Image 1 (cartoon, rainbow, N blue to C red):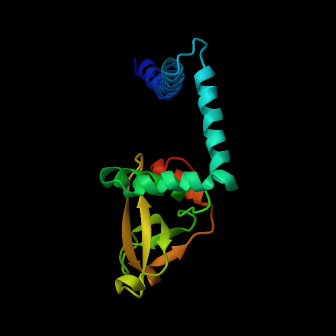
Image 2: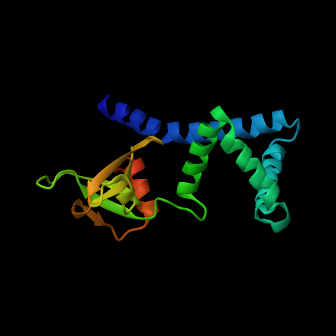
Length: 179
């Protein structure tokens, strides 16, 4: 009976991520196709990918960049929209694009006399503008979550890591399981 239970648990551990991933992709394809009124599965998804690529071209194009900047400026001035739009834009820019913020992985000692440490990413080397000359801002992502905490540490408690940011982020987000 113990072996049978073990087989069942191993089957669950394999099947649940596979089935959920396939189901989420199925929903994405189905919803986009339904929303755009396409009868062939996947056409709406391809049209969406093509549309995003065209918008990327327009944003990068000298002639249409001004229009895109006007739209961006409008979204950053509207009271409630500004908060949501700016947060999403900053989060996306932190991971991809020219303004990647999470490109300096570090190991930070929680207290000078402690051996306990956390992994994070330096987001601001200097905090002189806040009157904290000897401090550095470190973003510490949470495992299995899209949230994190911005913590301020004295510079002598921060040790830069010689590994890629994506490896550190994968390790943190997976709760230390991946790596």
